[in-house]
Image 1 (cartoon, rainbow, N blue to C red):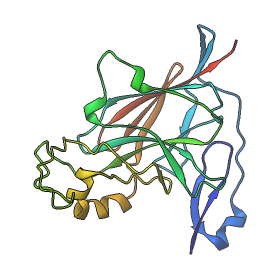
Image 2 (cartoon, rainbow, N blue to C red):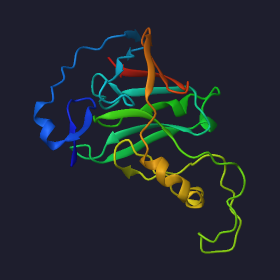
Image 3 (tube, rainbow, N blue to C red):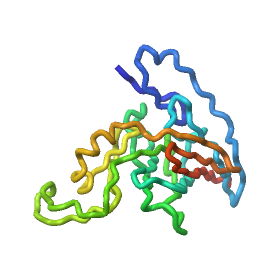
Image 4 (tube, rainbow, N blue to C red):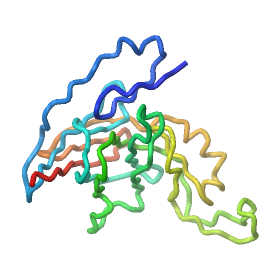
Length: 223
């Protein structure tokens, strides 16, 4: 039987047999690195990927109230969704969806969607999920809606369950109902692994397998 253990004030959610949990090492959180000061904010790119969780990016120090998390996807594949979740229970067996990005809502001059105002201290984590590709065609007649009407669904899943197990993204709504058979295996599949991580000054840059790239910063008010 697998059990999940949360190991630090940042995110270390590790699923192992119960017999192995007693030997897991602790984690020491250090002072912010890769930082700069600007406009009353400490800007930090101190994020990392733990080798035991090669798909998950998390801050080296827990995010706190009034922090601003800047997440800027530079490129995403059409079937990819970048996900920001936070723990929704003390043991993080449940997670809440904070924000998601797809290739249809990245880029442009409006950066507001890329900035997340942190309203409370918690454990937040970022990961990339692949779901079945969908086209912009209609979902067809509304046999699953209960009435006979054609529904235009768009080219990406746009609605997801708010609460789910961590590292799980579950679409809902018309488009999900139309593609429910294809979704079953995708939902259970592992997130995309990180291929490379680096720091450009106070910005953390992560590249996933397949080439998708994301720039991440934390802004913490110092005044």
